[in-house]
Amino acid sequence: MHATPLQHATPLPDKDYILRLQNKNDLTELEKIDLATIPPDLRPALGRSKDYFKGKETSLVLIEKSRNLIIGWAQVQKLGENNYFVEMLINPGWNHLYKSFLDTIICDYITVNSNKLKLSIKVIDYITDLAEILTKSGFLPKEVKELLVRTIWQKVKERKKKSAQLGAPSIAPT
Image (cartoon, rainbow, N blue to C red; front, side, top):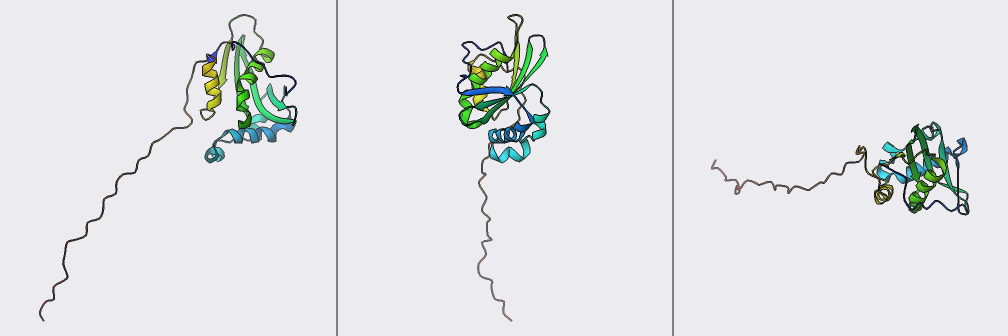
């Protein structure tokens, strides 16, 4: 999805959350967060390994201070002047933080030299909370690739086998 910076930004409160650069000790927790966001029946096919997160530079982790628990991840890529790409994940128990997390990334990690910011955000179709937040914030879909396809199944009436209308076998005289 693509838009300009969010209006009425509400960054994460510093007293409750820490946002820092990802390190190699975070990889196992990031893999768990990724699996937690995927519907259970799709985890074997869509889950990403530690290597996926290991190869991402300029990635941030969101930590809840009170429990010292990693609850989110974001990768911010600068594609050109005033052109950024963001990929985000938040543990499903903290989905309500998507907007604040994105606002914090925009305010603290994206530098803009003019009023023309191009910000693209990757949204996987089973993460509906993020898609709803982006829609409400004025983002528009730029490129859509469906990952999941919803199919509708209907049971067809089964035909009953007709048995032959034969009576008892006649006994032939011998």
